Image (tube, rainbow, N blue to C red):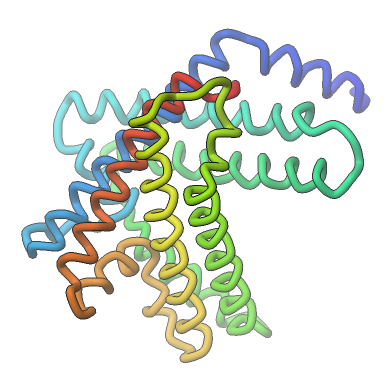
Amino acid sequence: MDGHDVKQVAREASDHPALEGAARAGYAVSGLLHLLIGWIALQVAFGHSGKNADQSGALSSLAGNGLGKALLWFAVVAFLGLAIWQVTDAVIGHPGDDKDAWGGRAKAVSKAVVYLALAWSAFTFARGRSSSSKSQSVDFTSSLMEKPGGRFLVVVIGLVVIGVGAYHVYKGWSKKFLQDLEDHPGTWATRAGRVGYIAKGVALAIVGILFCAAGIHHNAKEATGLDGALKSLRGQPFGTVLLVVMALGFAAFGLYSFARAKHAKV
């Protein structure tokens, strides 16, 4: 199969109603997970939750009952559909050989990897097993630091994550996220998107800072991911207020994701 055949298959797949429906469902499920993360973070702010304030904590919340487990299996299909759509976007959505085209392809591939990871996490919880995003982050960091130049690589990863966080803040403040949509989602969704992207950006920046600290201090336990980033806010001045604001920000991103499920370019 040559390059033309690959593009033709990708084009046919991207135009299929089933894949479009799965991709939109993926955005909706992402919205639900962000709402749950916001709810867990709000409980953590007042000392009423022992769950992780990250995707593993959100998935664990769903795994606690029959309806939640059914939603987890639905999430597996939805995230797989969203990952496949991102792959087709990487193949046919960015024609040309300039820097912008290659950047768009790289962005689509990275998103596909993220959604595949989410699909696997949902699959793990749907089967009745559990995993901790926080533990996975620490284990990954520990393993990486055992390699030659590992501490340097951990710091580089941290700097990249900080950059991604900064881009989220910019994307929210400038309303650049509206370019991902087919049409305007309305005033409330736009406001939720702005707040949500900025909150996620700040959280990612803190995650990146923790990675950098882990590499500099040679202590993998400092790379605690999103859960550690959010919980670290409690120890700061006005920590409860900061964590409440972040919780509301994640909830806002969840609400925007529901609008994105309807208006996204897929």
